[in-house]
Image (cartoon, rainbow, N blue to C red; front, side, top):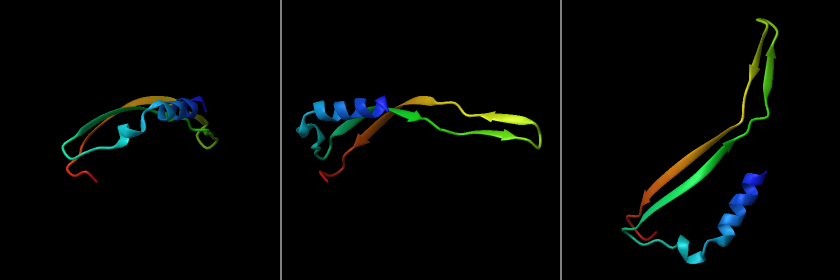
Length: 69
């Protein structure tokens, strides 16, 4: 839940003209992706348990704009 609040604050702090791109511009973005499953399993046929953990993964995105659209 706190990831969403951090993302919302980051969006509100950025200036609005930061989203306007022109042809030939490069854009480098960094994000944090949270994988937060709410699952677990118990397999009685073989007597095993499956455990799924939460994971936070960094992500980099590089974009080049060929046109201003």
